[in-house]
Length: 131
Image 1 (cartoon, rainbow, N blue to C red):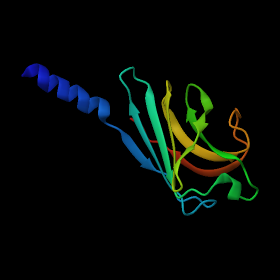
Image 2: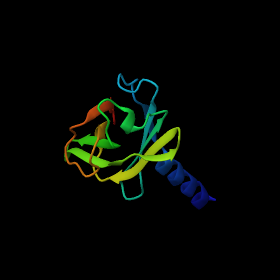
Image 3: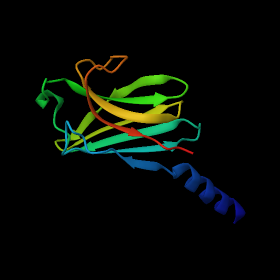
Image 4: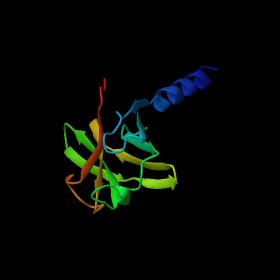
């Protein structure tokens, strides 16, 4: 019985996640963007960014090719953590891991997915208050 309770407690602790909502974007005001951050068993940060109703980057002025998600960390500065992928016509998503705790997450529209520093249009940014 104790082992079952301990297993349930460990499962609950590892599934706790922080969910944050990005502010309304002046560039893409219809976009509804959230980020979910949790730790995995190896103490990495699982970061999942979901954007509903985010227009295609080609429709921006000037047009871009893709949306890139960035994190800012104390240990590693600004890092490109990946390109948002279309789940369907109304939803884009990125799920990735980071060994470093994110302090900020932001999205830019870029022409190259491998860019190492943001240079495109910033869509939205959230500053995280982590414990």
